[in-house]
Amino acid sequence: MKLEPDPARTSRLISLLLLTVTMTILLFITAQFFRRSVAAIRYPYELDYGEGQVLLDTLTLMNGGSIYDAPDSFPFTVSNYPPVYHVLAAALSSVTGAPLASGRALSALSTLLAGAFVGLIVMMASTRGRPTHFSPAAAAASTAAAMLFVSVWPVFIWGVFMRVDMLAILFSLAGLWAHLRWHAHPVLRHVCVALFLLAVFTRQAAVAGAASAIITTFVVDRRRGLRMGAAFCGAVIAISAVIYAATHGQFYFHTVTATATAFHWAGILVQLWYPLAQYRWLTLLAALGAIIALRSRESDTTSAGEQLRLAVPAYMVVSFLVSLTSGKVGSNINYVLELIAGACMVVGMLVGRILQERPPGWRAWMGPAAMIILLIQIVTPSLTPRLTDWWRFRIDPDTSAGDRALDRLRYAEGPVFSEDTTLLVLAGRPIEYQCYELTQLSLTGHWDQRPLLERFNRHDFALVLLRFDIADPTPLARTRFTPEMLVAIRENYRPVEKRGPYWFLVPSVPGAVGRRASPGVS
Figure 1 (cartoon, rainbow, N blue to C red):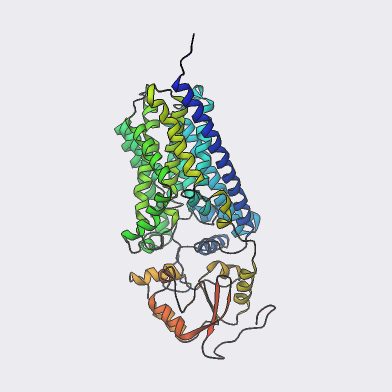
Figure 2: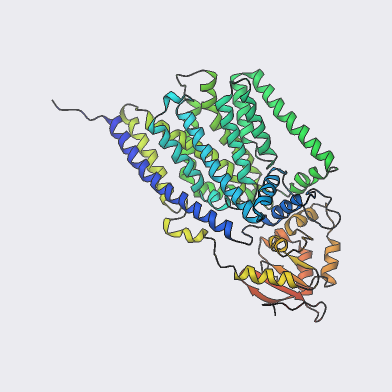
């Protein structure tokens, strides 16, 4: 008797084989993230422009100061984010004695833990929230989703910086997991609200977890959803009011007014459309997975089943809406990180469905087709860099340029002005001005740049350190300096040395200021 081939069984085996290859590649990329994290923790200088202010805020809190002072007097600095990350970084730094390394370690650990919660949420969705439904297929799908999150290049790059974003995403995902796990528990269901509050007071825009939990709860039980939304919003308002009063209104200025920069739709094309185009196949799978999840009617129509079906697609949709704010001047790839987390969770749920279901006929081959698309996305340059191109994101262990810049800043005789604020902190120099933040405040009429222009014209600064050629400013430089600032620097300072990314400028009037001699400084 001749046995007829079973398309469902054959397609499932092919899908498992493709997933094995995919997970092998993802494991390699995740291992590279570990290497990158170690290199970042060891690297003593700035990796991203925003690290300097976060480092200064951390040291300020360690010394008992306030990070939300009025920017109308010295020093002219702005702290754009709520204080949770800074408090945790300060606590960790007080133990290690290495603030910059501690901050990067906190971010890298947050990235890995956020990936773990991506996997846990996919596992919960794949098993309908019931431990008895555990299967190797669900475990494989959740593991792949966790590694996929870490492997996507914006996360891979940003996840090691001393920035607030990855900790905020960790709290947001942990809150969503707690909501799905304990939403029916009389006491533990409140844990998610606490985690969502930590997310928002780490980064203002980290609302995807809270919003998706409130929306899905409202769909299942309107009264309870309204209560949850009221509790969360009420807590945000109450905590903000306390900090507002304690800082005499400066908390609002720093975290709202100072972040409301000019908006351009073209900015969305740069910060949002470009990653989506690079990840077009992942975007396609995420959209397909969200549609399938929203249209499906599981056998489990209970409150728990409905929330598991709706929560992750809702998270992705909300994070997409939040990412549209990337049109602001000065935005960066951190605006798409939460969207990436949502997309990875939806794709993980789709993979879990492919591995566990056995549809009849031609639909059996949709699973292998989806797995091929995912594999192509991972191994081609359109997603993560090719396996031979990891040097593009390698942190150069050569610190000679940073050493030189630090030496010149440390021994300059007189005030210094530096675009790289991390170097100022390391040199023990005050950050008198923040380039980008004060430029944007000046353009919106919230800060008067004339005193700074006068200082440039008087040659007050013994040394000016820039990351661009003042004779030919880059587009990025034009977001960090007003046209008047660029003219004042160009007319009153001349470049005397370039080392790595750094340009060193001194007053164009000979003898205007002097510098104390030091080893290695000429």
